[in-house]
Structures are given as C-alpha cells and as structure tokens.
Amino acid sequence: MNIGIVIPCYNRVDSLNRLLVSLEGANYLGEEVDLIFSIDYSGINNIRYLAESFQWEFGSKKIILHPSNIGLKQNILSCGDLVDEYDAVIVLEDDLYVAKDFYNYAKQAAYYYLNNDNIAGISLFSYKYTEIGFYQFYPFQDNYDTFFIQWPSSWGQLWTKRQWHSFRSWLSLNKSLEDINIPASVKLWTHSWKKFYIAYMIDLDKYFVYPYVSFTNDFGSSGVHHTNQSNICTTSLFFGINKKYLFRDFDKSSIYVYDCFFQMRKRNLILNDREYDVCFDLYSTKDVCNIDTNYVITSKTIKKPIISFASIHIPFEYNILTNEGGGFFYLTTKNEYKKQSLAILKKETLRMKMYVPDMIKYVCYKIWRKIFK
Image (cartoon, rainbow, N blue to C red; front, side, top):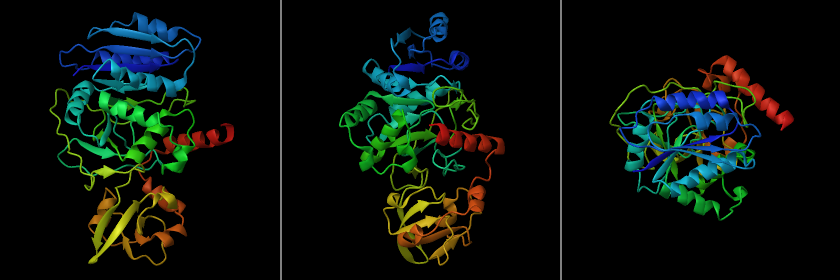
C-alpha cells in the first residue's frame, strides 16, 4: 500500500519544525514514504523556506504552494484529494507530534478496515476528553487496540482512497446541515471541514476507528482556530515500536461503539426484568432532538426516576450495565427528560479529572469566541 504523509501548513514555523523532528524519528518499516507540504498563502515565506530546506530521507518530498489564501477547510480538502495519487494519505496538521510507531499502526489499520464501508477513516489520536462538553472520556477497553466513534479525527488521521471518495461524493450533493441531526454546537462552527465530515458520518451512519493509545499529540499552538497555545488536548503518547496491533471487527451493537456525543450507542437494555430502548446522555450534552428512543439514561436530576444508578464505576456506562444502584444517573422517559437540566455540581463531578488551569483556559476561550466572533 502506497501511503503519502501530507502536512497542511500556514504560518506556524516552530510547530512545523517540531512535527518534522518527530517525523524524522519515526519507523517507516524500511519503505519509501512521500512527504507532502500543502502550504497555504500567508504573505510570508518562513514556512516555504523550512519546507525547502528540510531533508526527507525516507522518500520523495513534494511542496504544494497555494497562490492565494484558501483557508484551513479547503487546505484539508485538498490534502484529502491527494488519495488520487496514493492508496491512502495520512494528514498531520502542523501543531502535532507523532509517535515512532504511528506509520506502522496506520498502515496495519488501513489494511484491516480497507473494505469495510462502516469505516470513514482511521484516527491516530486518542481522546482523553470529549469534544462535546469537554468531559473526561472513558471508553470500554479489553484486549483489542481499537474502538469506534461517530466522530472524525482532526489531530492525525488516515483516509484510504475509498473512504475519501465516499465523503467527496456525499459532499457534492450539497446537503443542508439543518436536515441532519448533528450536535447543535457543531452547526455553529465556522470555516470547518470537520463539521461536514461529522454530518456525512451521521447521515450515512459511518464511524472512525480510534486507538486506545495515542500516536499523535496535539499542542494546540496559536493559529487560525486558536489564538493562544493550550495543552487542553495534549495526551500521553505511545512509545512502543514494531507492534502487531489487534484490530476490533465493527459491530454496531457492541459496547465499543460510540455516537457523535462520545456516548454509548442507543440500545435495548433489560433492567429489573423489563426491556427498555435507551439513549445514553450521561453528560447531559444532547438536545431533545438528539433523542430518538422512548427512554433516556441521564445525569439530569429526575425527581421520580424509573431506576437510579451510581457513578462508582468507570466507564460510567458500567454502572448502568450492571444495574449498580445509586442516585447519580437516572432512567427516565423522553418526556420527563425534556423538563430537567443538569446541576452545576454534577457537571464538575463528571469533569472530576479535568486539570483546573486548562479548564479555566477553555472556558475563557469559549467566552472570548462568543464576544468577538
């Protein structure tokens, strides 16, 4: 399989240099791998000079110079379109840092899921927080190295030719995002390719493959979508090498598949000898329009719940699957769910492992965007 590595760049010289240092130290299995710079026009030449002077010893180096400013969205789309020249592309934004075994993992994953139409891409990044609500994320884990989320990765991802062409075909239909049940906060994103990829995945019910360990790190350097550097999304990097990875087969009904809110997919549960069709909203980040079942399990305080559950187990869903009694999560009807809100104290309990300075930075950034957007 011929895989190209593509870096969309704009004006972050120090960040790009750090990424290139990590790429130099990675394991490419003795193969020739092309490195492509896709440089958006910024009016300065520092990025171009760095790309031209960088010595790439593992294959060909290519530099694409965009003559006018096309923005991050179009730059990412143009990077994805390079699958026409390769079997797959790995896209790395310039504020990332790669693990030594990132290429080995990506190639094995690309082969394993090559013909699976449920899969929309391969993530190199592993979330420790949800992007919706920014709560600690605890996916179920067993002997396998991967699981699935209905959410695209933007912090290091691989697309095969088949996966990218499927998205491009959908995008050409110009569907209205208002007709697709994506999270309300996502609809507010501007200049975002990811918003459309989320809509595509929800509309066609596709999923990204995620590793439990991270093969990239995101430093959130100052750039188009971040005015100040932040380590909110920085995570622990995997330091193994030459590993043979154990990939999970896709099964929509399994506990290892998560929706676009980083919640376990809706399912039928038997609790106290009765069956319920349940939507999980443990972080109370869903709107009523996102609930398409008769029953909801939520952290909202419900005065007369059908069943109440504890929060002593992690992942939190395990409290429900084992029917661990308590007063934190509640099974209720959709109609009752509409009337309630999530208490602030519960929000902070769910975020219990959030690093406080990072949380303050995140909240201040959200306030800044609302005032000055």
